[in-house]
Length: 124
Image (cartoon, rainbow, N blue to C red; front, side, top):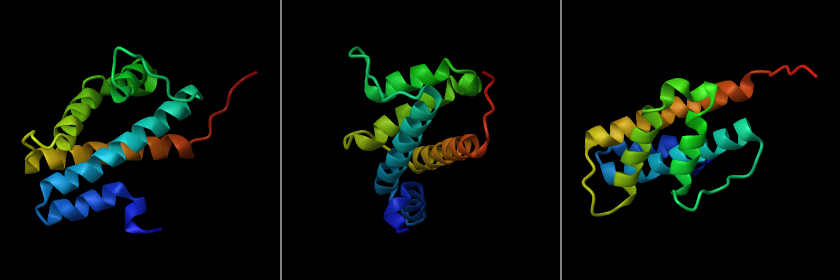
């Protein structure tokens, strides 16, 4: 596995170098990957898009309605806000933003991986 296969790790490397913009780009990629993986896992469906919303906003709204993400209803939109700041070149993005986005993407990754590793027993 190369470093580019792990966007969160790449983000951490750039953050340590003090390059917050590049760090935020990679953290944004990681955040999107984990959100989409989690959506597919929880719904079993391809990602649909409400034409009135952006893709990530729609995914976050749908995840926030699940019991698994009850405590994340404010947290996921705040990460999306930071992600939006990160990918728009004219928006100011600080070290604090970068650290928060990397931390949030890492927490989401842990949650997704933990859920994938749990066996779910369904009654018929």
